[in-house]
Every structure is written in structure tokens, then in C-alpha cells.
Image (tube, rainbow, N blue to C red; front, side, top):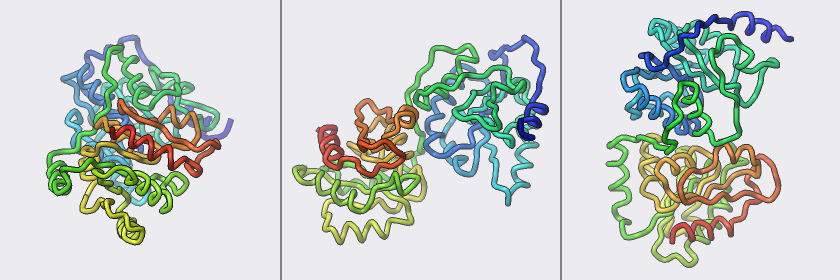
Length: 352
């Protein structure tokens, strides 16, 4: 056993009585310092938790990667943030604020981490529940720590459903797993005039970028998909989504390739603006990234391009009622080798 394993088991101890009564809980903290897609998948848990405990205050302990996502989630009371090392003082202030709240319950949605465990000990809620997690560290998972009152076994199901399984630890077995992503009226007001000149067209949203180059669309992919979509579809416009850093590159690509009916998304100031535009699409094509979950939240027919990795697909697949998953023949952690032809034909089929 290494030193971290020894210390974490030594420190992470708590004696519980048998007086676990979730219906009396008034203050709940959910720990989810994750990224955008992970966070969108958690919103159903927040919604259903508030339905079950309408008088309870629900707070979030997030990270700088996702603290802004909760802006329009009406069920949330306060969002606290774990900052990076250079802002450690701000993290410490939020830790003291969370400790002062004297939470009845903490739901830790994350795998075992030494730093997170120390923070949970310091916050000192009355009850703590969690999951064993998808990975172990130090030869341990959360189930090995006496700090937790109850721990769910990790299951290879969609992340939204796996997060909702925390409700069963609270005696809640009847819930809705529909995804949603509140974005606010301001972003809708941005999207409508942007799209109004093209209101007689059907729109296909094409997202180019993912979290790595291996999962993002190449310039060649974009050109061939756009040309394939327009080959027999006269009344279609394509809205190309990408990171702000790549917008000028995409404009040049569209011009150089003479992609006449392709618009490059621009003018958005936040993920909410981009999501508002996406909500008006008739079909969305996207590699494996948060755009797949945004499409699912608005139930937009989706063509999702994933690596040929079954576990990953099980965890992060699209949830729209109409959806197709495209993957390369070779297993791996890249989308290289996926079929442009299948991508185009699937999108056209969903469009019709």
C-alpha cells in the first residue's frame, strides 16, 4: 500500500448512526468538478433531486471548466468553485463557505481523488454518498473509505442514467431521465435574428471541433460532408460550428472550397449562444463532444461521430429520439476512418 492509500484510509473515516432520513434534508451539495458535456448530463439529476426535495437548497461544487454552465439552472442555490493552484486562496474561501453551510448531504459524483477526499472531510457534511467510480487510484475506490455512508457500484451505462442512480440511495426510484440545458432568453434573442434571413431553409448544424485533434473533423472531412449534403438537397443551409480560435480559418476554408450554402457560426459570446443556435437546427452532425449532449438536450436529430470504443459510446452516446452513431471500422480512440458517405446519408435521412 502506498503512502497516499494509507493516508486517505486513515483520514477518511466517519461513524454514522442509522438515522438516515433524506426527507428531512434541507441543504445538499453536489460535487461535480467536470467539463461541459459531463455537466449537461448532470442537469437531470439536479432537476429530479429538487422535485423530490422541493424545500431543500441544492448547491454545486464545480471547477473553472464548468461553473458557468449552471447559470440558468433554476434549481441551484449557489455554485462554489475549485480553482487551479494559482488561485488557491479563492478555493480556500469557498471551502470555508461550504463548511459553514453545514450540509445535510453531499453527493460526490467523482472518482476517488486524494485532494477531493480531503476537501470532503473538511466540508464535513452530516452524510456523504458517492460512487465507486470508473477508475481506482492508489489501489482504492470510494467504497474502500469509511467516509461514505452509501456508495453506488459503477455501471457502464449512459452518464445521465448513472448520475440519476444516486437518487436510489435516497429512496427515489421513479424519476425522469430526459435531458435539458437551460440557456436563457438572451441567447434565444441572439439566435433568432441570426437565422431569420434563412427561415425558408432547413438547417443542418455541423460541429467541427472536439476535445482533441484525433476526435475533431479535418478540413477535408468538413468539405466532403458539406458537398455531400448539398449534392441533392436544394433547400438546405449548413451552419458550421467551431471554436472561436478557428472561426477565421473556417471562413477561409468555406470561401476557398466554394461552399456557397455554408455559414460559419459567429457572433456568439458564450456556450449558451451557440446552444441557442443549435436548438434551431433540423439535424446536427458532431464528433464526440459536448455538442452531442446539447443536441440531446433539445432533442435534435443527431449524427454523432464516435471512436470505435464501445465503453465510451455507452457512456456518452446521443439521447435524441432520432440519432445515428457513425464510427470507424478499426477500434481505437480516434474518429479517423469514419465513413463520410454514411454520415451524409444518415443526416439526409434524419432531415427527411
